[in-house]
Image 1 (cartoon, one colour):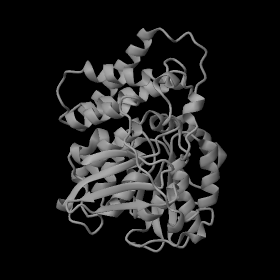
Image 2: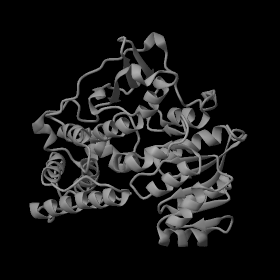
Image 3: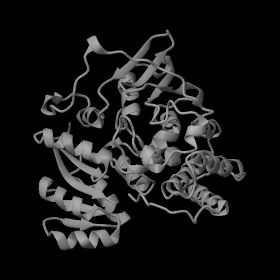
Image 4: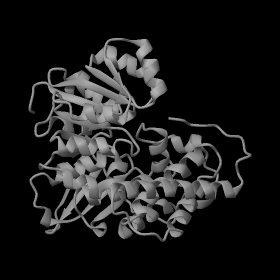
Length: 400
């Protein structure tokens, strides 16, 4: 690390991944110091974090929430604009920027952080899926960009010290979600409450639904292609109930190398923050270490007919061009509509499929064009949902 402690800016501080990062910082205050905290609109939680970590600045990207935060405390400067975010990630006191937020709002800040030669830990899938051609060329050093999602973090660890040319293929594992044993008839009756009850991970609303449809794994396949510079045929998904194994690499000689651990995001956060060293996580006693004597792991192929979102994402990965951005935009709107009870669980994939099949324009040539295509995916999905005429049903909103 360049400093002891390492100075961190955390984007997405109030979310589930951000909370895992903060747990590591709490456990190792001599190694990590929070300098900036950034979130969207949770002013009350941000106020608590400011009093606990004493950063030099905090930002809420929702302006109304930022105004509320200013009334709650006067300990730090409060920021709110995109220019403020870019100022934070390039601040001279920052060594490491953690992007733990969702969505595409922080893409330009990610670019700025890489250009400023900051170490970056990334748990933001959209930044890579939508903007990889304009993000990945900015990575200046080996391991400057460190994957924070458990599956990509596992692959990253497996590839350390290996020659990329010897990689035959990689496998991203999935728990299978709460409906792994369901049939098509049962899936038609899935409710938002059922889909949010993930059997392994504690995640936000959007990621939980994506995990239930296996779209999350499909999006991760696209992300892995760009992170590790692989062809779509080299990145595969496999079901691992219990999520003990997080990623597998198969090399040209047939050797399999895998990373296994208790399913806890704090482990991935610890490896990304502490690289190239490792932390002794006995400081976090609630993390149960795996025992080799009780380790039993089984793998299953995913059922892409039962969970067509995975197949749709793989097709977008194959086609590249505008399709990853369209996929992300359409999925975002379809998931929100399901949570609001405007469409059924099985209609999520139907909306996305129709958005992808109806597009015939050119591939994006710039980041701005890719973001426009992302919005077109959202707009087309909204139009399809409106035409379905299901908006009169009772709704329960699951806002972030």
